[in-house]
Image (cartoon, rainbow over all chains, first blue to last red; front, side):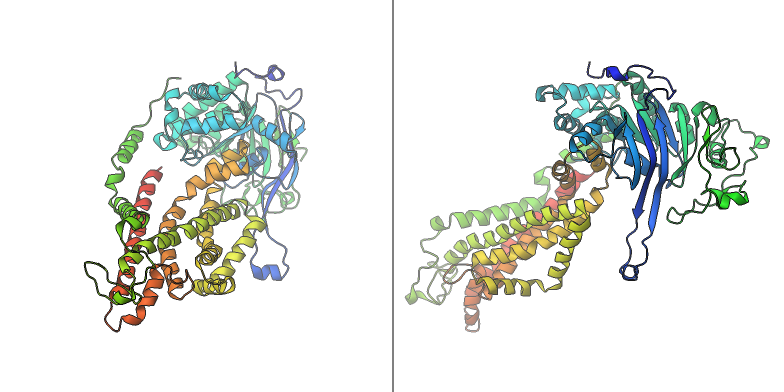
Length: 348
Length: 291
């Protein structure tokens, strides 16, 4: 059984409880992108502008858990996900996987961790190399990591395709011969080829039709059950996250503002930003009179180059108080697994 | 979960490709045929003509076209047809050898600059800027002046300067492709840089460079003939088209048109052949690329 869960992974897989060692631990991860300066400002020795995509994110993920990471476009959630799979080198901070430093410069360790941590990409149309057949693309992964003998590769590729709901006979086709949903399944099969433990799904269903979204989400949930996977599920749509996640983290302008179990966050959003997001989920039964009293968020998010002082949400927050303009609220535990960074709640 | 059938769009794409085999691509077919004929004539030149390319026959100098000399003879009595046939060997080489060298080096350097970015990219592109700032042909003449005239030095000069266009084309494409999700996926899968560049990036960005190769071959033939017209290419008495035009130039006024016109037409034919192949390839590869 190639797909068998490693023994060390077996216990407590379905639990949300973070008891025991966490699988993934991110501490104060910061990713700043220096912006290219014009020659004039460089000659004037002006300090360079910096885009603060991720500005101190800490997140602990337990084995077998699915954490949803939501936020507007440009809030840094994709950047954070790419730091976890090491597509980006964080400016500072620490990322540990089973207690091991992910940001190591040891080539052998990096290679081993690459096998454990995989990513599913957003755009099924650009995430597959158009010049390679499905068989060649999946086979290449197996060859590079020497995961199985050369003569067993076709069988293993077929197995992977069937695992994601495609047929082994489709291996001879090129990506252009598949639909968006099928391509996303191929992308999933490619990530599974290395037998990963932790998968960052970066907007994995955002580009798909709603009916296909449900299929792919069900596939991911089934794979999680069968293979004992742990997911970080990045999305800008809370509704999608609700179905798949154990916990939901809400990100705003490079920081996590709230973390809650998925079972409570939709009924009891704490942070004003989360409230607005939850309110934005389309409902079939919302009668005209039954409108929430929370005002919709107004305006665009501030620029991540010039982040507001204090709480970064205060310019758009309907509850903003004087303190919000000067003091940045830390994430504070509210009990019941609820954590929020807002001056409206005690501890901040 | 049940197996999902491929979308109908898939089969349509296959049909479209299958319905466009080589013979439906007239430019490519004509160009390739023309080039094959020229190459064949060049290779079998000794069988096609009783004369040698440098055999002088001063008694028969300056003869207009006749049965014995279909394209006439030059001022040394050498058969123009024979010299054009043998000249094709050198001129096809001028079209292909330096172009191939510049293609390989340019594509490699462009890919490396585009993929790694940073300092490597900056340095390489500044070199390109400097080289581009000089008039191309003046730069070539300067290099050949340093190395001395001759076919080999002409190749070296073109190789030193010609890679720039390829590097620019490929770098631009790689800058886009390196952020494509399939490249990011290859990175997260732990593939090595060489595997990513050669297996994933280059196959997707090489098309414009291949198409440019064909027009560049034409340019290099024109350049090569121009340089040997100026006396910087293969030296007398080698049969080469540019040199033949240069030697026949002084006799145009006396009405001896064949010494210049025939090698000129030969250049034209080869130029058209390469251009047609370039057009045809652009067409063919575009069809294949339809994703």
